[in-house]
Length: 319
Image 1 (cartoon, rainbow, N blue to C red):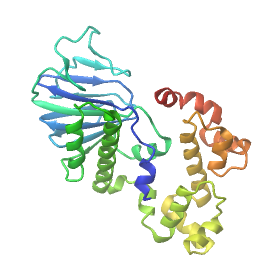
Image 2 (spheres, rainbow, N blue to C red):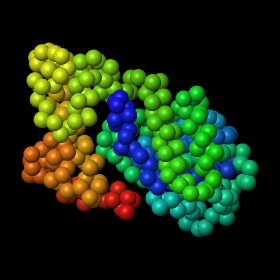
Image 3 (tube, rainbow, N blue to C red):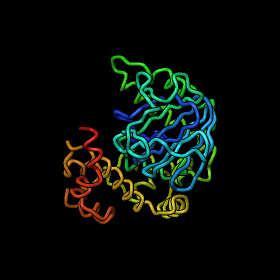
């Protein structure tokens, strides 16, 4: 598995919120759902996205925007259009003053807006679940990462457009997977167009020696790896390997191994069926006590507290 696939494997949509919007100007939507990541596809027309981080991006038909949460944002026909719709964490929509919306209505399956035709057509897919591992990818993006109309993303966005307003057996799962495809293709394209933003490990994966070692760490975190064993597997001397790894990754092999294990453990804690003991075995620790000590040192809280706080939204969504 390549670097990007490994990191994005945790960002699988599960019951994602999907909506097709048909809009005639003027319109302006204020989104305060604090979702981990939102995928916005502009099918027709133009729009502007303004993140609370200060970034503003103009969108045209065919563009895909990845909005990195939990920052709120506004999407509108023009930057100066006053907000008239507020969308909260439960995806409830209301007028700015809290009153029911009079000019926006349901127009079909997963479809709403103020026009049956819509000068602007927009698809929105909101991920309800987060992944500690995948967050390492998403945090490398700008708050609003835009992929202009691309032959890489077009096939996926076309399929999503065709299916979003349909209903039938297995439709939600189908839409989840289509949303995943749009996300992955957009992230891959964005990093190809913005190589200076790529995390170090993406570039390191291309290195013959260090890339092999990273695959071993990522695929087998439970193995009792040492600098010597990783160097041997990678076909390098211990000293040369450690120096090369640190130069490429900005951290030593043991430090990175620990970071990866703690990231995987954080994601596994979101599964209520997994005990701390089983997670300890899966990430290379001999006992739950050893994992708890390392986890607390790295994350600042014990696995138990992390599960109760950081994983609570994930557990609720999965339930």
